[in-house]
Amino acid sequence: MLATVLTGLALAVPAHAAFISSYTDLDLDQCLVLDADDFGASWSCPGYKGYPLKVNEGDLRFSLEYGFNIDANQNGTQSLSPFNYLGPKMEWRLSNALGRWMPIATIVRYHTADPDTGEDKSEVLVVTQLVDGNTCHVAYVDALANKDANALARAAADKSGKFDCGNDEVETIGKFTAW
Image 1: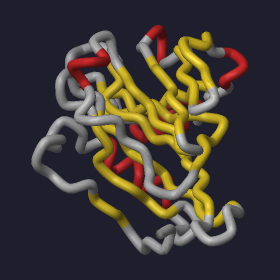
Image 2: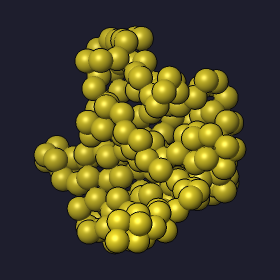
Image 3: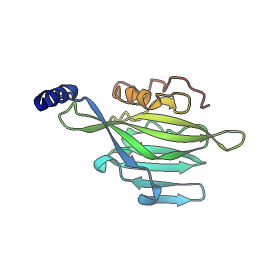
């Protein structure tokens, strides 16, 4: 009986999973302040297993920069047009296509403000592909309008590497009422 149960469990778990998630905190109090003035700030924060992450804030909007060669990876600093702030966690999508788990994308919850009142209005999951020289937002998912928002964001993240940051438009996935 026990052997049957163990065999059933072994069959239920794939021998070679293509993608998994890992999570890190987005707590600016745990980050190193790189620059700060009356107009904004930037921080160096811990990413997945030492993967560089830079958080920027200016004009009440946050943006993230990734990688070991940040200047080469950015196609312009990307943020969202409404005033926003970041959620407390970020999801790193990892692939083992190269024989070890490497980050290929992130999913970050941005809280956005109503442009008329400045009050919290929406939550958008921002999917960013992590490709050396081609790192950028690839998809936006309205977290409040879609019951399966996390699954939609993960599916978009798992397609990372196929997006051309210089030519492709960021995709809005599912129902989208955030702006």
